[in-house]
Image (tube, rainbow, N blue to C red):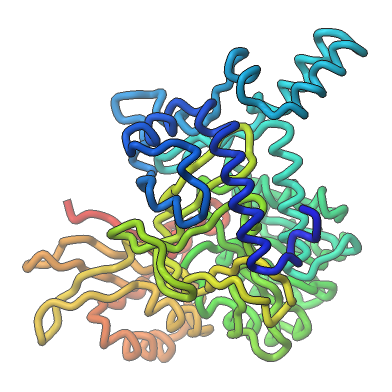
Length: 478
């Protein structure tokens, strides 16, 4: 980008995205992706027909179901780009061909092949956890992802003087690896300890103290257990607590800010991360003003690396600014794999805005922090007949009850006698008074509140193990 990634006015930002989109569709996605080439052909659309962001509506949405390996083990790999010698010569940008020719002239065939491999050969794969596409990174992509990670750290207010301690579980998915590359690209010292699968909380606390960690990245349940159990001096150098919790985190910042204050760390700030399994990058919030932890200015995205649409989930049409809709993701300028109009299943209830961020002043598209899931809309039955509500409506209530350390919303779909969903709220720890208070607050939602043993619920939620924690569990009655 000619100007800093976070400083372009909204109009210039859109122009940049449209230019990148046109180039990416014509030079890379359409020539190198048999899957998306078929999507274009079935829609009767040519790559040259897509010139503006609004033109994306001419193409259908794609979803995880199209990449599931049911009956065809090759389907999860359909998002990988597959250039061959013929398509490379015909479509790839001349600057790449010039680099190849120069390396061949100066250093021989092996050096020329290395240029193409670094640009186009996937060397790092994120595998789908619950069905969906395999995400491939070339060496070029890993550099871009690391730079995006450095941006994430900057959005959260971290700098190269900080020391990062991460307790995110190891695994072939985004959370652990993006944090790892982000720390490196930002020039920060970091220890990636691996969560409950690899290290006990007491060891995390020990290294937090020894390394004087100032940024702690963790899943919410693991962070809470550590904060409640460790001596306050353990986190004496903490500046930023980063919660990688995904959707339904409304109220979590207030909960953890209060927890930090009560454990003797009042100056530390709390921020949350939003991502989805197929993403290459993660989005962060900028820090809330001191004393206002409930205030969020939204998740800051990267306009030169992706196009985010907020669409009506029924029609696929883009909604207006700050209007509720599903987050739909399109890759820009990546080489290993790509997604086009990919349904995330995430519902941005506050939509997306492009105005200047009131918190940090960045000019990037921001997705509102009130995030739910499409499948969190549940049907119940009350005295007046059928009713529906979003599980995200109750998450602030549950996060807000600091005297109940562990909770999970367990939705058994179509389990009622009239075909309605049965919603159980499982609580663990705390005292009878706090649990009674939660029960009273949840009465309007027709939920069943059940106390369960703490360790049982900790295992159900997957604290320190699952990616992400299962704060909301959806299951079928059958």
